[in-house]
Length: 352
Ligand code: FAQ
Image (cartoon, rainbow, N blue to C red; front, side, top):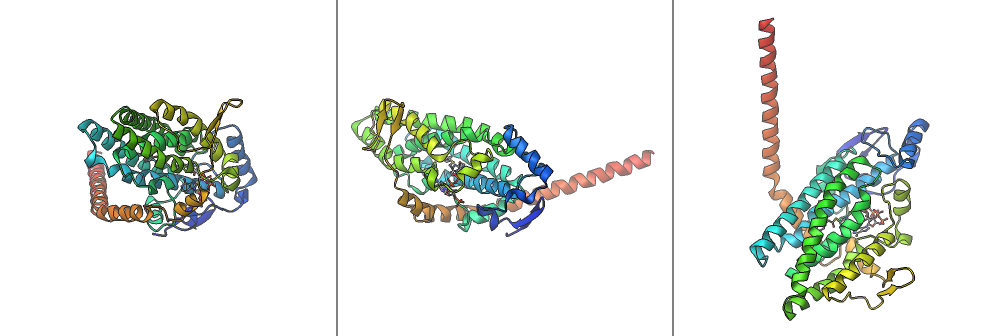
């Protein structure tokens, strides 16, 4: 915990400053290194772990990738809650696979973060101690089966809208991790939409359940894209660095444009009295999310924040024996391999 890592010319505590946004100015590189970095970004190339990069760029990536990884594993909880109560064996098998996929996404992302010189154990400590964030959406409860389907449709739908551009992010390991993640999220979104379709075409009670889920998940889904552009401290710099390709508001608009027709297809009503299609632009105009609520949930005061973090901490503690066993097994295998190599060396010298 609190390990100090050295990356390039600077060192920092991975549990402390890695979680904060502001880094030193981009002048911590030599002029030649800075020019090489700028050229890669300008040519839409990929920065790789071995390349020199500004410390502020590295910190921004650690912050974003860690928050993204935390979101994936905390995001297993609302739907995981329904695995034992799925309405059929088919739905249960699909949901189980989806929740496992989210764990896998967390693993790719922690691995991508580790290429930036941080340790995943420190990142998990930062999550458990509330020093790093995860997406606000996962602090809302999945109260009904329809909520689980709405999460697939809306939350995975929003995740794809945000993450497809990230597969062109300037940092190679993050961009490559996004390719498989997006393919899997795409399946998740379709299973959610298919499940919502079954409910919307079902009994009156099932349709009402689907509408209720849309009512509760619509606005929190719009908040997933982050604060409005004029209140987003990181966007301008992240876009200049090619980490983000579109602003928070641009992606939010794309999500609304793509999702409203889907709600109409389902015969459901989007809970926004201001929603209207602007015939001239072809885009929907929509109301303002409750940014005070967003700030409260980010600050730890959402409906399920405490429960989510407490459950995650408990799961981590309960899994300690697995990590210890895996480490002991790896150490024993490494020892066996060393002994084997030594024995081969002895034989070779006898033959000679
Ligand atoms: N929740 O200046 P910006 C998924 C923070 S994965 C909490 O605009 P930025 C899969 C932000 O971090 C969902 N915090 O920041 C799944 C920053 O914090 P700071 C997660 C938020 O980074 C589906 C501050 O506010 N996806 O759903 C949120 O440029 C189903 C100022 O904001 C990702 O993480 C929020 N919603 O843009 C799993 C994608 N929004 O500086 C299970 C990668 C903002 O104090 C089931 N991340 N903040 O540390 C991104 O694209 C960006 O980080 C944004 C925010 C767009 C989220």
